[in-house]
Image (cartoon, rainbow, N blue to C red; front, side, top):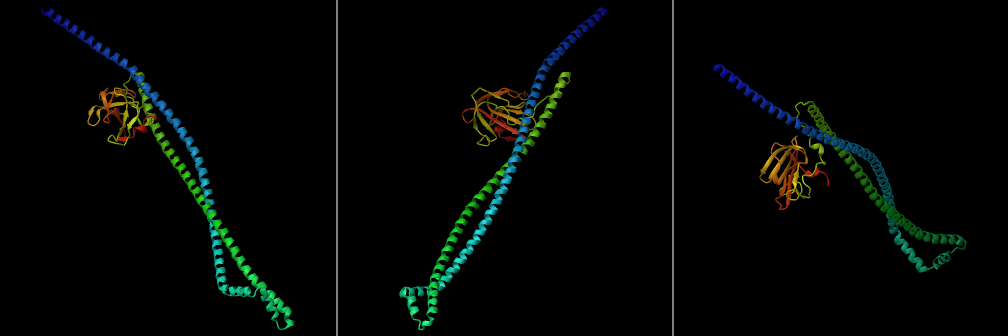
Length: 390
């Protein structure tokens, strides 16, 4: 009995062990099948990320080539503007020199006219007296002077004297009048030339300033391009690192080794991110109560989509934001989707770009849409600078 009992116990134990083995095998087989089923999904996702990284790298390379071409063109333009600026400066210098010469001549002419006027003022009483006397005596004045000569032998000398005096009177009046006329004409000409040179100087100064501004603008553009090229190189480097990790993940998937979660950084996709919803911007960044983000109009119930791959850092109700989803994109970069009608993801879940995170609901302004915020390096940035232009 004891022996049967003992055998029966062994048999029972064996049966239990057999059942346990098959149960464990079934669990193992289930896990293997689950892992095997998951591997193609993970591989497809990793390959999709690699393709996206490659496409963005190619776009960044095209942009780098375009920036290099633009910089070469701008450098050529800058050299042209620098030459033009130098020519305009030389022209302005020449005009200033001409204006200084004309001003000197004008001052000298004015001084001569002043001296002549003083001389005329000093001689005016005598000249007026002679003119009055000539007027009183008329043409007979010189005849009387000639007839008053007592000695006929001196008649010839007297005749010459009278003729000389008459000519002297006429010449003095004519010379004075002609000198004044010439000086007046010269002064008028110099004043006109001075005015013309003043206009030329103003034009030359404006042209030099315009050339200077154009050259400065080209220099500023070149500096901006240099900054953008540096940023482009930095973003390309970040993408290349991510792509190397993706290639490592693909090799690990092929060998069945444990795979580290693959992800793409957000920064290299600036300006190319898809919009979370389709609709117009109702409130812009830095304005109103929602100063850290924007409000985008969209029909109630429409899907609010993730702009980039990430992990759900928060999914729930948050005061001031209603139903809120926060996606962590790594490197202190987050996207926030607020005022949702309902939440479609859970905290800790991995979300791919374009995947719904919730549904659009009413926003505080009374219309329908979502509140959207983007934080880079932990600080709010204008989402419109990161989303696709439209």
